[in-house]
Image (cartoon, rainbow, N blue to C red):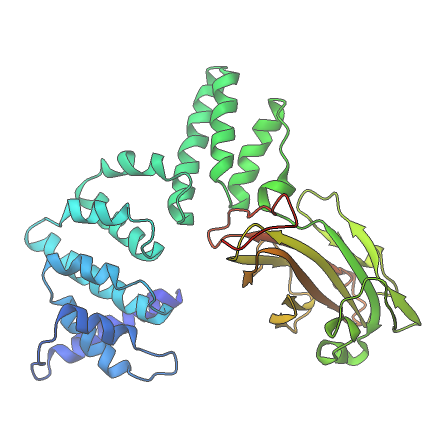
Length: 384
């Protein structure tokens, strides 16, 4: 059972408990939404939130849009509460009148600045009362900021490409697949697109498509015997000077350049730095941004790691060999206009099993929806 399913189940149970209690003083829909959004992970304000959700669940159908707009800025727990209220209103209205405010729901779905979760919920309600909405809306969502909507649009294009493939229309198939690829960010869909594209003789640059950073400088190894290295601030954490030398685990170490041709941007540290047991290596690169912007750095690695941007520690995870996959970790970062220095610390432990020998990483730059953010073409940019 998912966390969301459990939370909604808990909420429904709470609704029942409150339903047999004394009548509550009515608050406006907006006030109840604010109360729900004030709920905190540690349990604070849960009682108030439960009462507010109960009132919201009794609101008329014309309150749906107010609640859906309230998803903006809500924490995950509050989003679950609000989902429960919206679903309760919709279920009641569909059972009693069979109607929902279709035009208002469709207009809300088109508001790309709204919460992706709220937009998807509105869409799911809309198609219940108007199945034609899917054909009307999804084709225009190929570059939507919501990954769910974009995935639906990509899937339709893949299906169309398969159909014209059966008709041996290579030109049309190529066009459809290229169009689909422009909106695809999920690995399974990308693979489903590039295989037939390459069979059609087209070149696909996955490094560029995903936004992988492929050129780095490495320095190491530093000591990680006994797993102590994760918490030790070795010199690269204090300064990044590519001409510097520092005392390492087996003697002086210095920065050396490395690039990867792997189409998924994977860098194999073990092939470049040795010894690679009980060791720490740092990797640094520079990303040039065309403007001040918030991006996501998506990392895949089986090793312990820490990540900095422009000297600010963003996140770290002191775990080893629990597998690795695309977009395994997502870290939000603020880029300034011009060059931004990225520093990654990758730690290897002392396990000797075959499955514990990997010392690799891949890192890509994208927006929150997973679409690659390319570097600026020039290192000299101005604030926008």
